[in-house]
Image 1 (cartoon, rainbow, N blue to C red):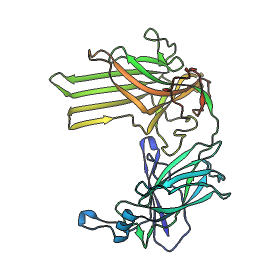
Image 2 (image 1 turned 180 degrees about the vertical axis):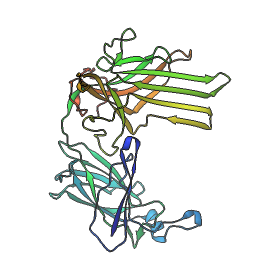
Image 3 (image 1 turned 90 degrees about the horizontal axis):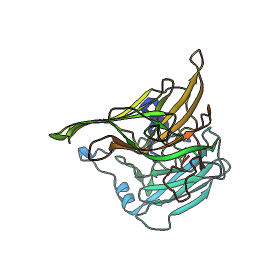
Image 4 (image 1 turned 90 degrees about the vertical axis):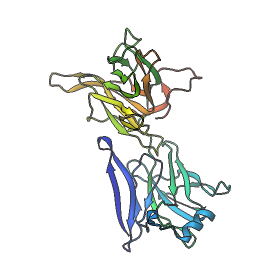
Length: 371
């Protein structure tokens, strides 16, 4: 088989996978290395015959029968950590989907060579998780039924039993952090208001904060005769030697972010906006649920302009929202979850999942616990 890895470049150059394709050439035995994408899907397209439904083509009888009654499917996983080292003795469990029927679940142990074969009858897809002490759980869905392709033959889903490398991320340097989901009321529009991550509040006199890690600025302008003709903005502004960078989250792993903050690539401002003329015509830049911001704050520099002291944190896109605070049109409101490492020059943003330095009440389940 001749293989080709199709990739694309996401925002700020984060690499995203579209598919791993294999085109027939007579060579077998390839171990595929898909790159984690936004969705939890392990998609492998082996250059099977594409079905052009727009031209009146249809799936083969093999595919139609497999989708209705099931076919035998198989995939072999090669489990490695983030450095490429084989991970053995991990637990893989999940199930093959068969129209809700029971009896198609599995629980297996990865062998010493990092390999585990998953095989059973199904009507389309298989879900699985991989877990091991000292590692972050990984979750995937593998679809045997591939849209727009003839993917079954003689009672089997094809390609038959491909070997795919999947990553089980090892825990590296989990640290205690300030973690909080906050609702911030912005007193006025079109003005900067500093937010202190260690206080979890706006800086004085609008809150209890003392040092601004970043500034929030909200604005909304609209036509009183047509509320759909409107523009809103929410801007994060960082200090002169600080900054933020938007990253793409890894949806397949419990550890969705980088382990540590990057050395560079930061920008002084990040703005999200929505511009509309009416309900049908909009342009926008939103903070997607599959994104997050890494930020650097409280930076100090030497005489040569080099950063000598700094703090690092991250803001999640999954719980982010902004808009009007109230019907009176005064100010705005922002909701977001963040993590902040209080140790100067420690770039780790890998939360240990337990030691929240805000010390919330045990009944408080609203703060983020993911690493």
